Amino acid sequence: DFSRCFGRASFGSEDCARKVPRAFGNSTEQLVRMQSAAETALSRLAMAGFGISVGTVALNSVIFDVDGGKRAIMFNRFPNPFTGEGSGIQRAVIKEGTHFKFPYFQDPKIFDVRTRPRAIPTVTGTRDLQMVNITLRLLSRPDVEKLPTIYQQLGLDYDERILPSIANEVLKSVVAQYDAEELLKKREIVSQEVKEQLTARANDFHIQLEDISITHLTFGKEFASAIEKKQVAQQEAERQRFVVARAEQERKANVIRAEGEADAAKKISEALKFGPALVELRRLEAARDIAALLAKSKNVVFLPSNGGGGQGGGGGGGGGGMLLNIRD
Image 1: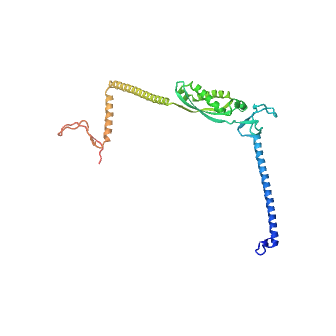
Image 2 (image 1 turned 90 degrees about the vertical axis):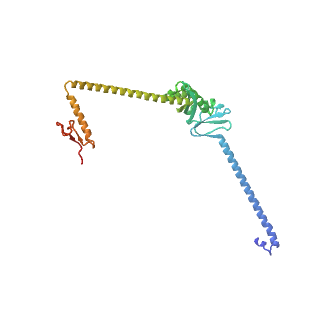
Image 3 (image 1 turned 30 degrees about the vertical axis):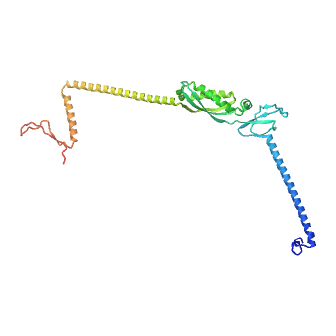
C-alpha cells in the first residue's frame, strides 16, 4: 500500500523506495496530458471565437439596414460587372429593410424622408420702411423619387442649404408689398401668398412643403410707440365727439323745453282772456300743495285764515282757522 510508505518506521525500506518514484511518475504523466488537453481546448475555442468575429465583420460589411421612415441610394465606386450597373449614384431608390452590398465597391447613402419641422427667423422691412421680425415655420420632406438628383446636386444636408435661403428671399419680397398695419390686418392673405411662392421655389429643388405658417410677427419699438400714441389720439377724439354730441343733445332739450314753456304761456294768456277761472284754479292747487306740505310738519299745529280778528276784541268778519296735527 502506497500510504503506508509515508509512516516513520517503513519510509526507508526498499519496497517503499521502489513504489514512491513509480507513483509520482504516473501522476506527472497525467498532469501533462491534462495540461495538453486544456491547451488544445483553449486553442480551439480561440479559433472558434476568431472565426465568429471574422464572420460577423464580414457579414456586417456585406449587408446594411434601412430603418423605417428612411430611404437609401447606392453609390458605386466602380462599374458592377455582376449587375451591369455603372459607377456613381444609381437611379434606384432602396426601400426599408436589410439589403446586400459589395464591400468597398458600394456605399449606401441613407436619407430621412419623414416630415420634419423647421423654424426660420428673419428681419425685413415693410413698404412704409418699418422693420418687422418674422418667424416662419415649415414642415418639409424630400421627394423620394428624386433622391439621387438631390444627393448629386445638394447632398444629405439639402434642407440646411436650401430652406433658409429661399424662405428669407420669399419673405422679404412678400412683406415689402404691404404696410405695417396691413401685415396685421391681412395676416392670412400674407401667409397664403408666402406659402404659394415658397412652395413653388422649393419644388425647383425637389423639396415638398407640407405646411407653412407665420408663428411670430413683431415690430420695432418706434412702431409700437407710434401705435400707442395713435390709440391715445383716437380715444381722445372719441371723447371729444361724445362731449360735442352731449352738448348738442342738451341744446336740443333746452330748445324743446323753451318751446314747451312758450306754448304753455301762450295758452295761459289765451285762457285769461275769457276770465279769472284759470288763476283761481292755480291758486287752489297751490293752496292744496302748501296745506299738504305743512300737514307733514310736526311743528305746525294751527293754520290761521287770511282774515284774522282785530285787537282788543274788535273787528268782525274774520274767518275761522284750521287745526293741523293735533297730538297728545
